[in-house]
Picture 1 (tube, rainbow, N blue to C red):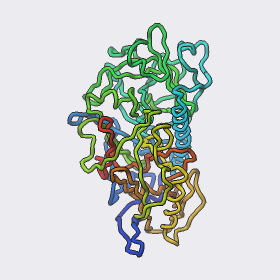
Picture 2 (picture 1 turned 30 degrees about the vertical axis):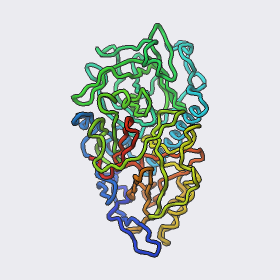
Picture 3 (picture 1 turned 90 degrees about the vertical axis):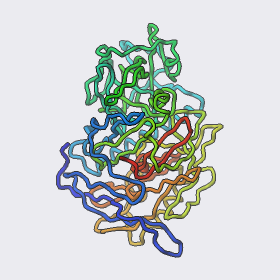
Picture 4 (picture 1 turned 120 degrees about the horizontal axis):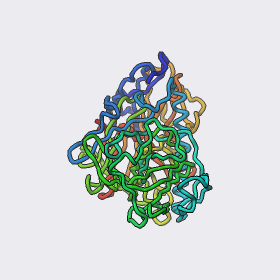
Length: 497
């Protein structure tokens, strides 16, 4: 995709990790600031801890089998090779769009948690459907509300649907369970880059009956002429509705039969461009749960950055866990089974533990409140205010005294003008989890550029709600492994290839 030529931006590139000798023995990252040009392929970052360069293979070339498993190419929507990256993209525009999507994502997660905690699995939103719609309101247990059209989905995969397989790009999302794609005939569909899927052309498409166990697992379901109907509302106004079916999904030469998937005939909201959604959540209808017996209930991803070219593998099966993985317990929220909760026990800045009020990061298993969620669809890590404020203050105190602070940018409140500098020492930031697992963040996961003038911001934000989210910026360059059977999450640094 053509990009704006000769527009100079600044990018943080880790050249070394040093422990700076001082009375307080603080830990810092020494960063050199290299000028990159949007008109050429970015230089791969090579951090000293917890990162690796991304694969240069395209999205469609990474659908292949691995030993006893599946491997699917995963691509960031704003990467240089992505079909969803806007033409003539600028750093400022990409960041603003990303943070806007993030606000909507947080709204969606907050809404779903609130409903779960309140014991309400189904939303009571207003119905936008017309009486002429073949999927009538009376077919469902709850109505819908109209969605937005800003486009969402941070990461995409390419896979084949049906027999013969039709290649489509789908959002890959750990915060969702139900798989679905837009289907013909389409009552109301948003614009997508791939042709709409026509189930009548597939020999393996099979409707699910209303009394089947798969239909009964849907939170919101309906029935029409003994055909199971599904509805998914995402809390931010997005929704999809249609017939629930089984279909064959293909990943390179590997095919998985009888996968439960929604065939959406009325879809609106935050999915512009993608054909649908590959749910990677923890619930029973997610893709990892459905193929768990085939691939050991283990999958992993290593999230590529916006600067990456090509894709990196999303892996199911024995090869999913990184050889150097550190493990922590995967928690269960009894009120909401979709999200992956982990027990974060501390945060270190500059090698020193930040003083955080007890219980700020804990999940209350009796009420479903609180906790820390690992989420691929949220970009910026959101910490409850009681944890964010002391972490931010410690980071500011650890920055060099001559680092010039600037005004905030969107949801970022800690930004610096690094123009004219050749290098800078940043205080290191680490997440500490139950069991001793530690995520020592590379520099590009700590500060991000927000314009092409040398402004960098701390890539964290406060959350006024009582839960926290570890976003994809902080997860980039780590192979995150999810083992539902073993109830554990593996964190592997420098294992993206």
